Length: 56
Image 1 (cartoon, rainbow, N blue to C red):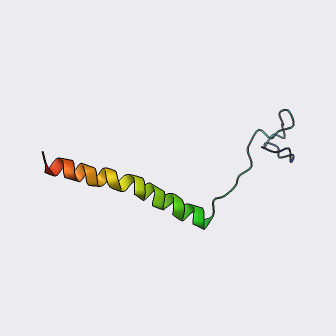
Image 2: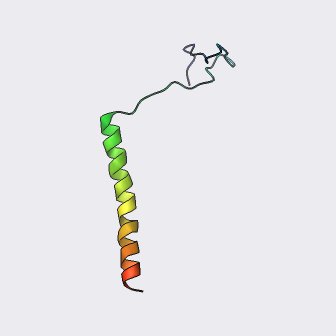
Image 3: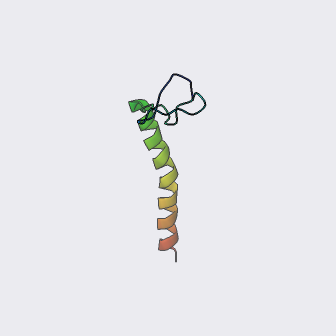
C-alpha cells in the first residue's frame, strides 16, 4: 500500500493509508497465463479421474 491519499467513499483514512486498496486491473497477458496455469492444474486431475473410473 502507498500513501498517495486514496480515501474511502466517506473520506476516512487510517494512519495515512487508504482503507480501500488501489485497484490494479490485470492485463491480457496475465489473463492468458492464469488461464493456461489453471488448465495445466485441472487437466491432470481430469485425466486421472477418467483413468480411475475406467479401471474400477
